[in-house]
Length: 97
Image (cartoon, rainbow, N blue to C red; front, side, top):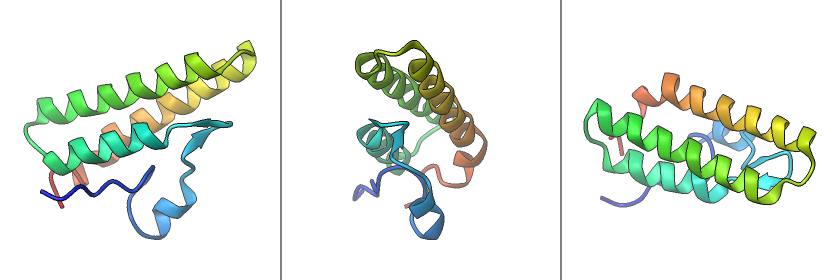
């Protein structure tokens, strides 16, 4: 299957308004990895694993690139917002390429 990676958010207009960064920390590669895993598809458990990899990758980026505690906490909040968004809305896109 051809990768559908396009950064953060779905393709189209909605994807253009979802940022590829969390207050200055790029999560573009985390989003592309998540897109690749969603293109692959699989079971509900594999979807959950893809979403958890997405969260871990974003949190790793935030932890590596954040010095200020307030900025780090805000970025982590954003990562969890992205995570819970894909947990809820991702079921419409998983394995659909």
